[in-house]
Image 1 (cartoon, rainbow, N blue to C red):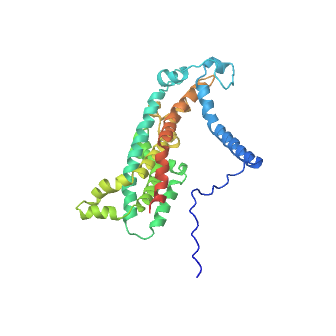
Image 2: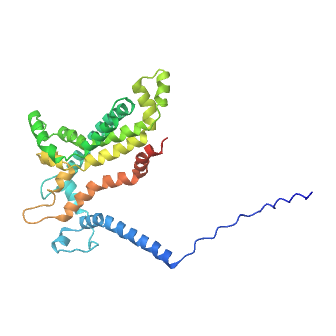
Image 3: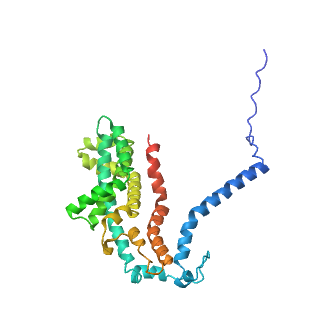
Length: 304
């Protein structure tokens, strides 16, 4: 009988995979990618940079027609004039910022409350044509808002709501509510039914199960809807220009068209300062909450 063959000696080190060779073609491809990325970033940020630089220029610089990328004399007079003095048009831009905050926050709170209740009901109710219903809700959110201005104007005039914050809050729901209901309806669908069923067995009501069990799990989606709703309501111009009549009720986007304009010239540095002040809240929200926004948008796809 032949002797059994000896087992191969265990290797102490794995064979290392050879690294990719650095070829001129690879270097050129990587360099081209970063060049295109840099061009895209510069092209995206340059308009905002241009507004910031113009807002820091003095009236004398604009009178000379300077178009330099850097201001000769940095001045915050445009910001103080918009917020405090408003000597050109009499508009108090600080007041308009407060008006926008009132409208945007009120519309956001209403949107989140209704969106949570409606989205949860749609996700847990057994009904026919649920998917087409959610699709119709989403399509309603993309319906041209200009077509709604006339009927709402007639309705608001009869109800005495023209030049009223309530008119803008209700109109802003046209932007925010369809997206919130559609998004949360799909988001709640991904949450297992066993969570609230266990709470119902323990004696909780349906609303208690929603508040104590479902909402903590659904916070990424709710946070995303909150941010998107605030941004949409904050940037509204169409409804504001249609229903607001007196300058003390103007929102910030509407007030910008009147800032910096006089009988003989336009102070673009003051207009740019107002645009920067309107943009800063949105930029800060996106910068500090981008992770939550991404997690909310992708959470439904990651849940089993």
